[in-house]
Amino acid sequence: MLSKSNFGAYIHLRYLVQEKIFFQKNRGDTASSLGNARKANTAVSYRFQ
Image 1 (spheres, one colour):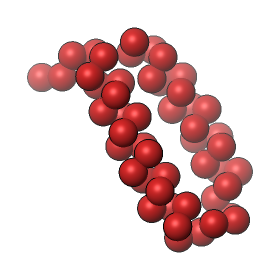
Image 2 (cartoon, helix red, strand yellow; image 1 turned 90 degrees about the vertical axis):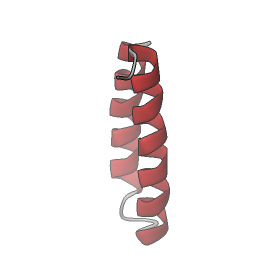
Image 3 (cartoon, helix red, strand yellow; image 1 turned 30 degrees about the horizontal axis):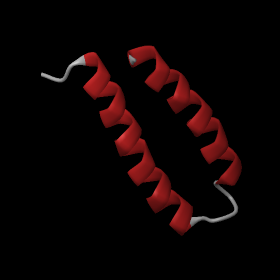
Image 4 (cartoon, helix red, strand yellow; image 1 turned 120 degrees about the horizontal axis):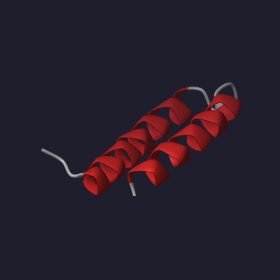
């Protein structure tokens, strides 16, 4: 079972991989949604620290 700090890092790493894939697929269209997702993900990461 993951500890809270590891869980936050795991979510962050997973998101970075997804962001890279999505960004390569739709460079312009997803820019704004990626920005929103990054803000949400940052909040999640801080919550687990």
